[in-house]
Structure formats: structure tokens, C-alpha cells
Length: 62
Image (cartoon, rainbow, N blue to C red; front, side, top):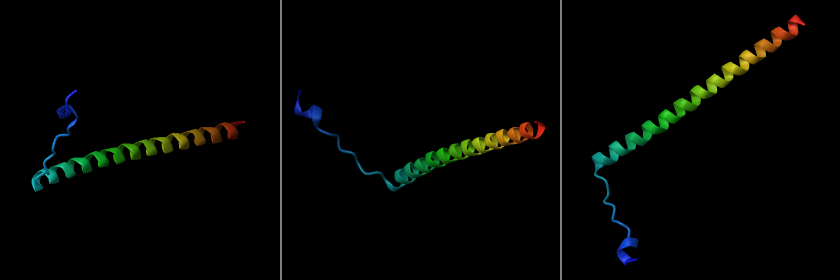
């Protein structure tokens, strides 16, 4: 192998506009992940309440 294959490429710094767009994309991804986790949390909470209600009804009927 040649040395050039191991040499890392130089990454140019982003322009302010490119940096702003990159930052907004990252914020969008983080917001989407938080939204997904919150929806899952609420779904689990609803299921737990439904199970608790069914358990209460079953015990009351017995």
C-alpha cells in the first residue's frame, strides 16, 4: 500500500450558510427522535392504564 492511501483528506471548514443549514438538519433529527420517544412513552402509559382498568374490573367482578 502506498502512503497516499492512508493520508486523510483535508476537510474544508463550512461557510456560515452551510454551517447554519447543517445545524438546522441536526436540530431536526434531534426533534424527530424526541417526538418519537414521547409518542412511545404516551403509548406505553395508555396501555398500562388500560391494563390497570381491566385488572380492576376483573377483581371487582370476582
